[in-house]
Image 1: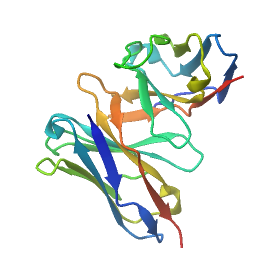
Image 2 (image 1 turned 90 degrees about the horizontal axis):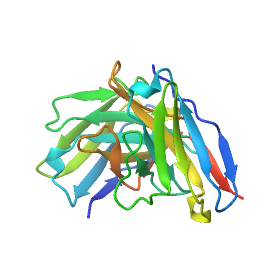
Image 3 (image 1 turned 30 degrees about the horizontal axis):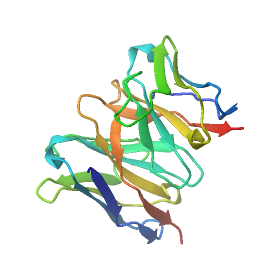
Image 4 (image 1 turned 60 degrees about the vertical axis):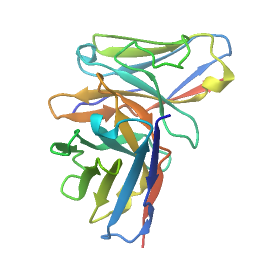
Length: 108
Length: 119
């Protein structure tokens, strides 16, 4: 089955740019989605189809996808961005949806 | 406003059964694929199952295939997950999520219902 690999943690100072990655074999050929989950809350979609933002999500959140790596970028990081971030794809070969293991973003 | 409200969680013994429900409102339920996703305590998100518009096509994660059944009642705007032969490793928060139109992402999520499998 398809595997997505995310770093366990990323740390960034307020106002700086945070980048977290999602690795998978030829992930550039798939559509990648990113979810934010704060403690005790349900996940929230923040980027879909590699780089699109749902309404209500700040422009500070952006995504890219190429080769074997997809990246979520959060510009001008705020304390409220501290959360777990999960990448996700649909694996057409199995018709299964797959999540990465998640990355905990810490705002220093 | 789109709302998804799960119910039916609880404590169940290994080998037991439970049926989860997800009541949908604020959108035309019959026009969207629906999913179940779970999260074990302190762990990441794991996709469980998805169901198409009229309930005729289902897929399941390997870990639950043959034990769980996803279904829907479009007249009642409700999604279900029948869970049989439950194991300790099924202990998790279970979320229902809407499949986004035109994308294979999940654009709205419920708040989740807790399932604990323990003797």
